[in-house]
Amino acid sequence: MSKVRFSSKRLLLTLMLCACSVILLQNYDISEKSSFVFDILCMLFGLAICFVLFIPSVIIKMRTNLDFLTVARTVTPKLKIPLAVLYSLYFVYAAEFFLLPYTDMFSKKYYSDVTPCLIALILLSACVYAALKGVNVITRFGIFLFVFALITNLLMFGGSIGTLDFELYGFEVTGSVNDFIKNTVYFIIPAFIVTLFACLSGKTKNFKLRQPLFALIVTGLKYGLIMFFIWFSLGDYASKQEYQTFILARAARIGFFGGIESLYLALATMSVFMIISLVLCAVTKSAGKESDIKYVIIFAVILFAAHMCGSYLNSVKEIFTNNYIFAVFTVITAAVIPMMYVFAGRKSSARKTLHSINMS
Amino acid sequence: MRARLCIVLICLSAVMLSGCQSSRKIETAQIIENVTISERNGQTLYTFYILSSADTPLKTEIPAGSFEQACELAQNQYIPNISLSKLELLMIEEHLIDRVLKTDIEYISTQPSFSPSAFVALCDSKTIDKFSESTREQDLIEEQLILLKKNNPDVSINYLSVFNHFESEKTNEFRVGTLSFDGELKISGKKVIKS
Image (cartoon, rainbow over all chains, first blue to last red; front, top):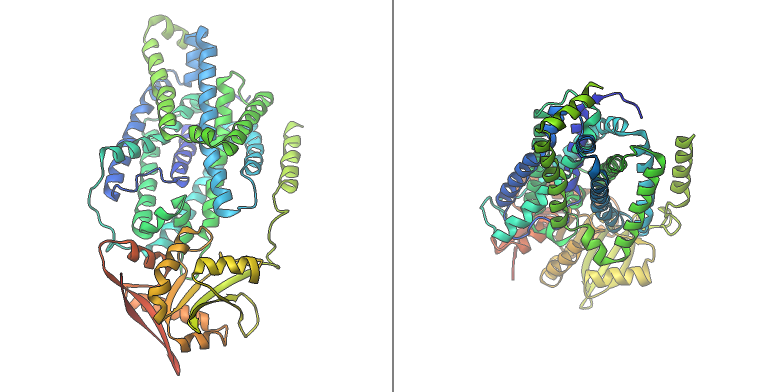
């Protein structure tokens, strides 16, 4: 693999788009009983937690200019295999967490004749190719996707302004403790980008603390806008159907120009494609064979097999798409384990080892 | 070499496994543009207007108890290749408002194939007769509805708004666009009292 370093801004831009895609696949994840303002407060709290989760990997990056996995392998060579297993499991789970809802939405909302497994197969084939090209190339695609997302969102929001209704739905703050927990856990999900950052940031340069902060602020803005339009433009109609952001795109209309849901679907497809491609890069890196064709294909086959199980067995699907499991798993892999290495890195022996890697 | 192999495999899978074998071709699909709900001999009549380039509308009349039932009958007996995703206008004869408006809008709101921004209007029997004579009436009605909404923001002109007003606990009544024909097409807002 190439040792050329690319701009950290580009990686964070790509990760921001991945974080934004969480709300594109939103399906009754936000409590229906709570009010809009309450949901926004939960979102701010959830994203603040995401920022806190960023801290350990940011410290490692700033201290060593390496990614967490390289540091972990160097500082604790004996823990190489348990770490590889844990992170591989996490990334397989993360890929399924996005792949299952996406294929489900595609077949339910757009094209019911095609089976979800077929969509997964085609998407995974494309992701394998992208993963072989490496993170640098995927982040270049991220620039294109950013522009596309901007246009799609402008059309979605612009087309929904006409149906805004402030008379029926207000700005009061109502919600219970259970709503708060449910919503906050959902808004911690974008923290999966922290784990991706921890594993993939080794080849980036010019990292600044403001980059993840900016990524999370833009993510929050997009979440806020989507929730605002779902709440005030769709209202109760949104609660009658699955995948509310799709309904928002479907209802958006600029004059006689409709069909914005096609752009939304393209955006969701490309976002999921980018997440799975990055996950494949990260999973092969965690296994110690970055972008190796054999490992990429093996993990793609595992993902497909897991998707098959998830599609046909509802209990498996429920486990793979459980927000609570994913949030806990994310907190462990994004913050708890890297934090241990932040403290371990303060020891003089570890510092010397890392210094020698940096020098080489 | 590996990259080329991957590209070939992706292209092959995209072509061979596209899932289009059981798809409905656009030439054979019967795309419903409008539906009118009227009454004949005491029975509710759902008229499905099929998209066509002819000057006279191509329509199928289906007597049914509800829109859900009419859609099922259309699919199974009358219009086998029916496609409702492009439905743009639902016109209900004014006196059937209590019988069908709430139930039909509720049904539509749960179906992913319908666009929530499609128009809904009440009308008199003369407008329905006029509507069945010429395909040009639809554009005219849609323009009138948009104009009405512009001048009276409180009037509901699509499924989304009508459904939300029915669901909301804040209001007991709301207004829906109403068309009447007396030599020329007229439009106004009619109050709907929630039962």
